[in-house]
Length: 390
Ligand SMILES: C[S@@+](CC[C@H](N)C(=O)[O-])C[C@H]1O[C@@H](n2cnc3c(N)ncnc32)[C@H](O)[C@@H]1O
Image (cartoon, rainbow, N blue to C red; front, side):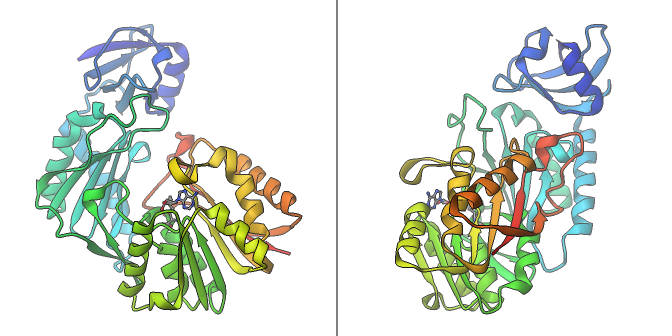
């Protein structure tokens, strides 16, 4: 075990339970990525143990205080995470997040459960040393048919893109799609494509909140991906649902998800197009909607470049121009570094640009299987506003 001595600023945060050490906070000691490290104050107190990294973080803390983060400790964290899901996941749902990284005490580690498959997603290759502990726990307590390991580096990490693709680390590969249940809905997911397998379960409670409100409405679902909001709207009585996404592949999965829920995709529209182009055309042709869902990625590259920081106000403005009087916009952001205040500022700017005013009907967030730790501000990453426009 290598010792890293941290500065007083980091010491203060570590004593509060913060799970990260940044490179500039390390005063003494060197470690290679994946090395087990002991974090010490300048006075020599042991503040925690964890794993070293060489990206935007110098270390992630697996255990605060001076006891080691051995397999028994990791398993105790997993027991605690599983106990929460036993309470908050209803019997009709079998696709959910079992471990939510920092907020479940396992920084950089997410585990999603898809009916009979587990997808372990790491923020960094430096977390590889605890994979055997995770696999051993999953095999003992959940008996998955297969366990997939994948990576999703933080966008602040300079090494992003250099990591291996998803691979099976235990059991058998899924036989193509795995059909999961989310309350009364059905969705196909593809665990071997992790981490983006075809469904974002953090939106489950948002879908549940909206469920009784779709009846008879015309819905525009932008950045529709595999159509989870579209299916939920159509299944709950929306008169017409238009799903827009740049990816034809995802839209064809959205159509499959309609069929999986006994809905006829022919009764709805699926547009393979850039969202801004589609919104502009709807404005020019005078087409408006009772509900517009805006759930963009934080960043997207290629044909339809989108950046939450640069484009959110413009997106809200374009959506407001095609929202019928009295219609609703469901605006979402999943970027942890963006505070609710900043997000609300973008919404206000967008509405002003479009000359519209709105009431906030609900401020929603991630489902309870994506808990947010009080000592980790970025943990409350999902911000959703349901707005009713004048
Ligand atoms: C985070 S997912 C959206 C999740 C989705 N709303 C859901 O509930 O499952 C991002 C999606 O946006 C699409 N996308 C990214 N940029 C786009 C653009 N400029 N126009 C249309 N779709 C875009 C991607 O293809 C991807 O399917």
